Length: 389
Image (cartoon, rainbow, N blue to C red; front, side, top):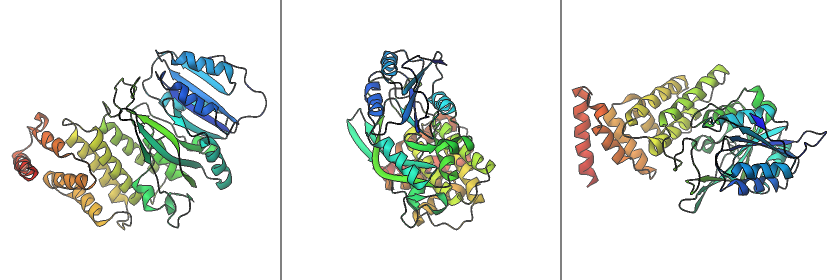
């Protein structure tokens, strides 16, 4: 890792906030991102940018910004790593701020974003502050605000996982951007991003459950861009943000988060985690699963959910009756009943996976199923086709 020698560092007082930016080939968006950081109403910060061996002219733009603003510290990696994990982990290791936050170089911030997070942390003494996101689908030129109603069961915006409301678990926050962490907390918990897809999911889950207190800011202050027109949405070169991601990696990340929580002695959140894992699993299934890995995804997710379920008290308050019915079938019933419930669940949530289910039954990978399973599957497939007409 080489540092680009930009403007001279300011002497004396360390910055209050360190913003850590991961960049790779985002020439088309880098100006919008960096200007939204430079022009924040909160000024006492450093901007650490780690470039992952970009091949476009975005690096020249970053060098120019580093020369004109001494808050910007640019680091250039000579060899591609393929994920933002290195940039984030390296940024944390050199950050001087009391608080840290992560930004992707194709995203941008509301100009009050840093100030509002900083003030929330200072006033609440929380370990993490976080806002709502605006998910911008550039291919369709559509903005989709992702509003969170996270709070305590009594409505307080300062809370922790032990007194969080149902919405906290229903829409668990798994993005690294934009959460502002107390750096001391982040380092003490030994949080680090793995070099894989979904690299921020386990970090976010463990952090949110280990934090003594959280502060939710019910404002949309961060714009996350997906399905970009230019550059890459994924480090592997796929144009679509949903292409080539392996849902099994996502499920393994969820397993890793549960293992970490166990190693840290974090207990008592099994029902909430069961809900959160279940919701994330169905998301992975809907967005990323293919005919080839659909049944394997179900098997791996089932194994994790069974473990969490067995560790729980079985006194459920977050699940409604329909959701509990699905969970119990997922854990205990046959593949045919499971697929039936998958379809019911996804239709209820406006997610159509019927075709995927049908094609998965057909796939050659499952031609070796024993007859006792294979025949009911094909009978069920015929029933699905008839029911779909």
